[in-house]
Length: 296
Image (cartoon, rainbow, N blue to C red; front, side):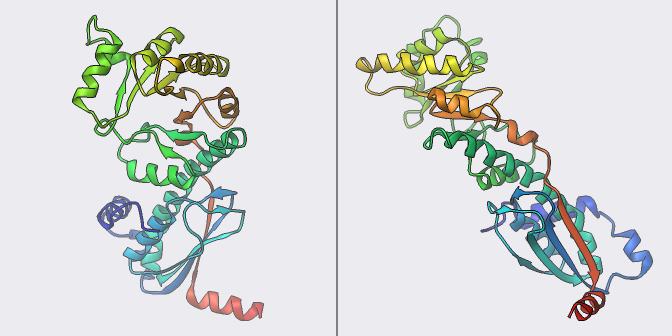
């Protein structure tokens, strides 16, 4: 599996942390001493961005062995990677690589929890994470979401059609059917999605021909009612609009939305997840050899 970020992007992260050299390591005069660095899981986690962490460590001149890939489920004390190199390189890459794995493994672990809870009830339901990740981190967010088994809802404004109530503020007195016709002419190959906050708007949007009804902050009972009402429209439509439940959905309540019949759940909650703890051990190469001899 390839890193999500480019070498230049990873180098910028290193430079941000060590812009003018490592003063402590240089002052101690230990930079050229050979050493070894081991990462292991302290918490249970779905691993994410480990390929990026390994690539970052390698950019400092170290040799890295990866023991698993992004998306793997790790138990406490499971090995993540081992790096060999000079002290200056190990210490330069240590914290940035560790934090990268911790933060995005938290996102991946939270995404996997939602996926597992929803698909235990509805095996074919789609789990989509929004674009509300921290600005500037989209590459990492996408990789973490995918490692957790979910998909991206949309990557940005350029590739999908999603009509929000805020768009209506500028449309004036126009029918939803006219909106659909205009969008079909302007973007004929795109699926048309609309966000609605009331049941009557959801039904009207389906009748107008929107492909996906994104029901914002509907309760599970309201989602079940919407799905049932859309099924009754099947005699006048070639296919039922897809129902996407959105707003406040997390691992604790997603099963209720899956049970209600939502085709997709849309969530931002993984981005708020607690980072997963990664233990890092660094030692001089001689100390490692000595400890191995003593253990034998």
